[in-house]
Length: 572
Image 1: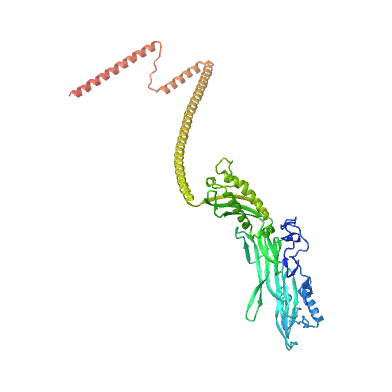
Image 2: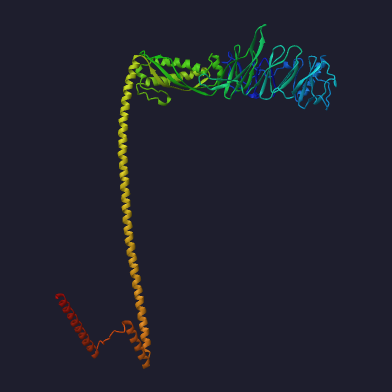
């Protein structure tokens, strides 16, 4: 969207449904519509005029349309020719072999006896003597997309979507061009481009002096004016505003005020001034009060916590306040002075932090102050804030400082009490630490005893399990051995029985004799060849007994003789 404006306030946003409300402060109270940025647009606003209709009536002023800069230059050239003035576009025909070169996208500038001539066709333009350059000189080249071109009274301005051009016409009237362009030729005077402004990166940041929050950004465009032969002065001719979301600005013209919503705006009307920037979000601050005297003339200084939200800035500025803090500070000081003036020192000395989260039930001696804060201060402050377009969301007294002799006395007593409390707390802490140490040692002993019991149970279980395993092993081995012995005996008995049966089956006498011999051979082989076998019954048995006795007697006689000979040798 293209915007041209002259001597007016230009609202840069194209969102017309968010057009800010314009209203007189004298008609404000009877107006049912709220003065917020979300209010509906009104018809016939006295402040805002985003399109200037008189620009079309200026002589030799052509807007750059869809045809571009060349089409606008051709239209301006036609207007100059119809008025009997020298034409703007040069009639020179380009060649391709020699001369000054004009490439596509460029314009050639020629000074023809003090009048501008423009070369628009690309190519080469031969100089003298190949072409007629009488009273002409080639000055240079400019780009078709250049933002500003100024040459011998010809002015070309083309700004992009984020730019704004501030121009002074030959009569020193100021107008602003945004997202558009124009071509003009000044017959008397000049069109001066004062500044090209980047609307999203303005130079000066505006902050709330109390909360330090950023309210928006501004930029002032100045113009130098020759006031006399020796002096030049600069005057502000345009003020650009960049207001972030949830913020607003108040404009003033005489007794009329207007609320300007978030977006990019510029003020060019000299009768319109910027009253201030405001935030519509929540704010909070800790605010000290002036000294307040209790009923028994004890001075006290309070530190209070305030949390508020500005919803109707027009009401605030109508009452003459520049910030919500100024309005709340005066009203809070007045209400707290009235409350404290009806209270005694003893009713305020106990509790140091007072707010909605620590209100007592009324049985405490300091409940008079708490009740007064709850019933009077909050209600009166909330009602007073609404008159200024402010919603008070929280109020609390977070600290108080008593002054004078009684304050110093109370400080000493408080210091002693705090020292006693600290000492008692230290003793309690040491006792608690000792108890915790003993409890820890007892817990460790219990854990160790439990561990030892667990280990003993484990060892006893291991011994029992090992004994059971050994007994089970012995029993299994005995059973296996007995079973093996029984099987071996059964096998031997079966072998003997089979052999006996086989022997009984032998009826041949020779075979029986041969078997007996084999038995004798095996017996001799088993006991040795020197063994004498004595029969155990009959005459052979008696003979064997006699032989044994004889052999024993002989062995005894030999031993006796050996002993006697040993004794004889020893005596000698």
